[in-house]
Image 1 (cartoon, rainbow, N blue to C red):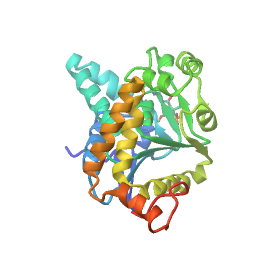
Image 2 (cartoon, helix red, strand yellow; image 1 turned 60 degrees about the vertical axis):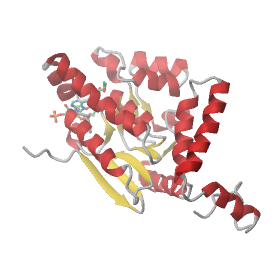
Image 3 (cartoon, rainbow, N blue to C red; image 1 turned 180 degrees about the horizontal axis):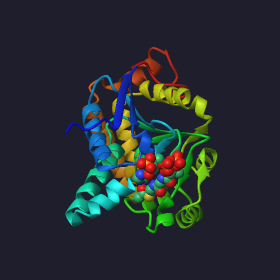
Image 4 (cartoon, helix red, strand yellow; image 1 turned 135 degrees about the horizontal axis):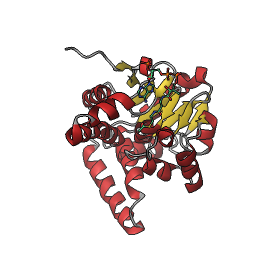
Length: 271
Ligand code: ACO
């Protein structure tokens, strides 16, 4: 039986707008959505006409987290095999998104619960609506924030804020989420798409190879010692030099030193 589309994609001016599209279920992530997300990431990752991916949600939700009926109850009914399969599918696309070739932006328009913190963290940047609402509702239905969610809040928030959200299940709005640094910025809902587009365009003007190595470095070095990080960063820059067929860093220096056509302190070189 053909499955309905629960993920939609529009590519426009090198921005891939990917949406959770189960608005009737507040974009809760069921196994079908998890599979469609993985297929979507596969399809978009190395396309030349895609430079940035934005993950948004249709309707009033960004994502109401994992689907309690289809992701939990129905897969548990299939035993351990069913549970592990559905975990692999969800964790799989979250991981794929964390290390996606292009920079990614979470554009959080509304509800973001529990398992939704997985893709939220997986996106490199996050911009939300002031009207958005975030919560770790797991405690309200009797579980701990699993599937990486506790790790996400401990990595992104202070211990006190992480503990508060985890134990109380209290909601926070977009401005509070921004103040806690769960997201980069919060703007009124009617400005969300325009602001996200502006940030995406800023990224599109940068060297794409440098973006990929830089975003991976930010995620990797956190758990390294200083010496390990120093070594890793030297090696990664050398790998980036190999992959950057445009020799971008040399061009960047040339346009500044010889051509005097731009100033790196004030903006990017002309790609
Ligand atoms: N899992 C399964 N179904 C869901 C989920 C979910 N996470 N969220 C919403 N739905 C369904 C509802 O059951 C309802 O289905 P129905 O129309 O067949 O009855 C439909 O989506 C609409 O939901 P409402 O509750 O009617 O929508 P409302 O706008 O009033 O409320 C809200 C939105 C607050 C998001 C509410 O739906 C809710 O609390 N959802 C659960 C949030 C949650 O706790 N998610 C799990 C986090 S923990 C984890 O992800 C591991």
